[in-house]
Image (cartoon, rainbow, N blue to C red; front, side):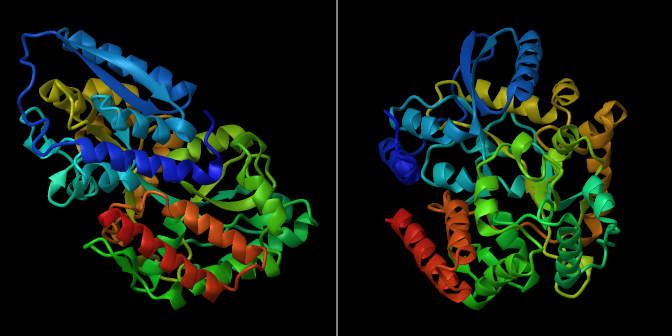
Length: 436
């Protein structure tokens, strides 16, 4: 059965709610199969052909070291991954080990579907970055170990900058006015074919903007933590990008949002700046054939220390609370996070590892783009603030809501203030509904 796109997210969250209502407390504690018994773990992840091949290699390496534990692969693609996971969870058939995203850590973990890894003797967290560890915690439990850290940045396509004869900005002190002026110059030189900047409509775009104003999308106790006037200013800026022609018309942006990287404006060297995660640098350079320069976020006052950026886990390794083999699942997750052999295979494709010893061991073997990312994340460390609170239960689809209200503004169906008011009311309803 094909689920209409407008209902797909409701189906997903509804299935999760049903699944979680079936769970009992105290499942999946540190008991389970002993080391001498042969067990099979199901392992689900999302990725592309390259990541799938890489993951199979790390599975083979793990099984060679742990002949009593067999791993059954369940690879998938992002588009259908969460619906499939929700369905399996509802049927009490969740994989033992799950690649998890931060927006769903509370959604699954907070309602009892994930194993508290802090209670597993087979997991060593002593060498993992403390902030990275905290990013996988909710309500006092460790529901995931970060696969690696990441940062949300402006990717600048130097080929487009050179064609427009526009210099790269100094990202250590640039402001939003500088961003707008740079993008407008690129668009003007592009004569309707190339554009200065794509619109930033990711959840991280709004989070960074709010943090620049001393606010947060969520509070530590799982509520919304911003004024609607600040959110309205976020949408006002995006509208200004459209009106100044720094960014493409709304219709072009809508078409671009549904395109794959290879067909997108950025991928075809038609936009100068766009927001991406640092671990995507290699793919962007390979697709564009251009040298891509990572830039810090523009700020309100030109200070890199107040630009709102933060380290974010690329994804997590989690385990189902219903696993019949929690000890074996913990052994596998510990291997993924702490084994030098695993690090040599996984490298930085799921983010720069939070185990500093792994980073040191793989650095000589990194590809040029990955070496650049490691260096960039190290360079920005002095200016990085603490990570924002973990998204609460019910927040899994907020990014889709942000995108929808951005469209409403760009198509002039809502004013920025009306969009901000409606957005806050809708998300408050989502969070309140999830608490029932």
